Image 1: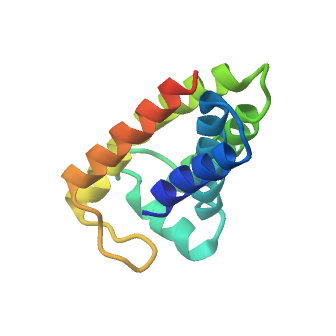
Image 2: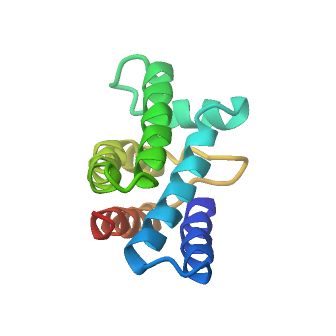
Image 3: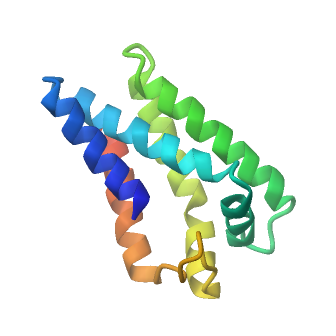
Length: 138
């Protein structure tokens, strides 16, 4: 829920400051990815993210670190006009690449942040929304 709140509130604040629609969407996405990236480095949340990685993948700790760094780089890229379309496209691809971990976590009922696992259907719908927002920001 926190990523959705970050996306919507970042977009709303950007619009309040008079930014055009696309720039506001990029601002909302940047805030969302900074929020999600922070979870990759906060010990308790990091452990939950590591548990979400499908067991068949090697080095889940390294994968969580890499995806966190990529989310931060993408968030910064969204805020630079020259790189924003590329960053949005790359972040959309990153979310698609990470989607199997979301499906695996939902099926294995892996909790996150002290909350029960998000069921598969709401998780899929939320992911579709985030990917669509990134594509719209290109």
